[in-house]
Length: 82
Image 1: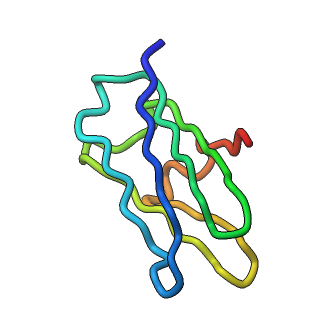
Image 2: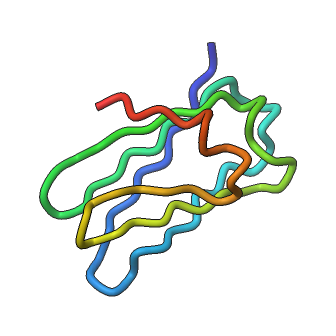
C-alpha cells in the first residue's frame, strides 16, 4: 500500500487549508497530519474517494477544534487516526 502524507499547521487567522495531492492514482491512502497549536491530529482517506482534482480543503474551527472537509462528498470517508 502506497501512502501520501501531507503535513499542515494551523495558524491564527488561517483556518482553511488546501491539501494538495496531485494525482490520486499515484497512491492508495492520503494521510493529513494537522498541528493546531494544542495537539497533533491525523486523518486518512482512501484515494478512491478523492475527487479527480488535485486537492481537497480542510476547514478548522478554532473555537470547537472541529475539522470539516471540502468537497462534502469525502466527509464520510475521512477518518481520524490519532
